[in-house]
Length: 376
Image: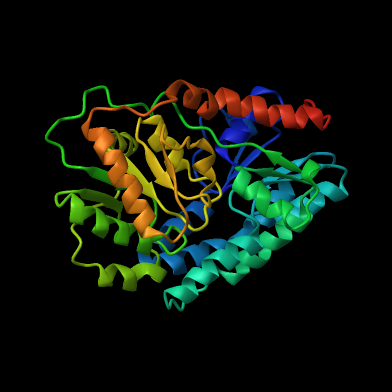
């Protein structure tokens, strides 16, 4: 459970702007020294216990219920005049406290506006007959409150930014700052693609209605009609709302993975040919950026904020949401190019856009324009 994000904290630390980084874990993060790290391991322990004993939605809802305690703790760490940076729902009271004491409250908007997020997912729940709510109502209410408490909102993509603009937000309060990728780890495979490897498609991350799982599976079914030995790699992280969808598609030969370490995660990209990521709502899917950095073309939707990185025909395609036929057609088109030995283009441009240096420059540039300088 975190106040903000590791990359934001590292950038603040590099520029002498970090007073403390509050983490609900027992370990700090690389790049943030112990003297600027505040740890509360009990949150991590409780989250772990919920994750291994409860279904995904219930475990997630339990985690959200801890946010009030995290907020109380964060408020106890604040000092007058300090600015406060956090994500949706984590620390609304701390945001208000910072403002009352002369600071500014910043919000990291990692998804679209909470009401857009809720409506998009609720529509999918209705379409697929799910009784699960789009998210915990407690989390939803706190997310809306955090938006109201923020002075400035960092948006991870144009998709997220547009969701706020259409609700009347002042564009000067919306600071575009896409997330970076560890380019020292996420790189194209060092070896050539084996000629005998079947068409290997990857979807990493959770399976849910929000992530477009029904359309992913239907697209794979259509692909296998043309390429019978095609492989779809998926992760065994299943939200309650797609259990019935997976049962209906139990005949599909999916390649499941459980927990893999970081090196294994990178290697799964490097030994795949293409990513399919048909999210209905996703502020900035880091897995899309990771796949691109590993040299994979990506087929995704305009509702996945990382679609900002896609140059159609050069490193992937952007297709409409809820359209398995379009997904399959785009994937098959790329399969012909992959079989012909083509590599995706614009990798040098991607490296610049995805680097931590670019992220840091953008983030600190926004703060500088707001007149924020070192508070130590």
